[in-house]
Image 1: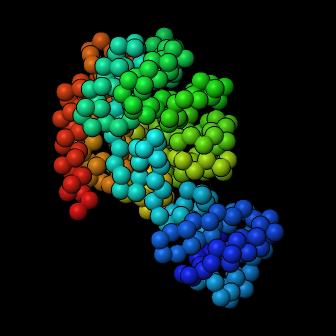
Image 2: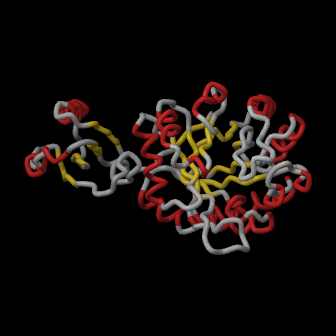
Image 3: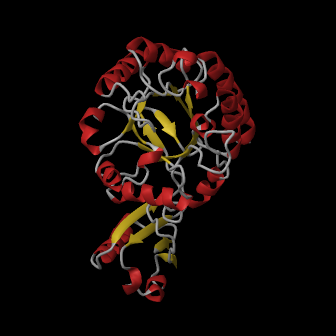
Length: 334
């Protein structure tokens, strides 16, 4: 249930109404926008008499929400959420370029790539320390050592870092990681999502290979139910009958999610296609569709990459894509 308050309502009046709701066993979420205040209620709201509530002087309207996701719902929070990562803002009209290799392979590799992508306009460095792979015989990442290399690259470039977590047991290793990524295969690892809800770190949540937007938002809800609202959604392509590309980028997910949720949305064109030459057009499409950012794999020597070299751009190619994205953004935000 959502209660929209009239403009000019005092903080004391808002708190008194919230206390009234809490006394009835409801969780209360207050969203103060530029023009109005909205109180979202979670729990058994059948006991609330909507006619009585609407009769209060401070209440403008009352709406019941049918969707199972509440905290992530734009009806609860009409204004875009803006996530601040060490000064890098994501969402609310701020566009972020996240770039780096699929896997951290050496301190020299990750540092070189970090410096190059930063020069091209990237503001967040990505790199996999723990790598979920389809084959148990493929490179699984450097794990804790990889995180150390990422942190060194962060120190040298002053770029926030993002890397993927595989298991809640690894959380102590992520203490200095700026954004924790939940990969597509773990989107519905609910025990992991619950643990991440107890942190206050930004979480980038990737859509599963065969999951609906509703299921993605419900996974976000698991994290938010624990108290962590710092969530970035990521569209990374879904599995369809098409075989020419690794996955199929669902570009319609961007405007649809913009309607459904206040959370920022970034697009991963690298995993969506699996083909380096397709990354540029898909990244430009994401920017034109209104995404809040892109996450692109960049490797200084893709042909010898230990993971996903076929979909990785060279630093020179990323520089070209980044410049074109800026031009698209100039048109898209007019």
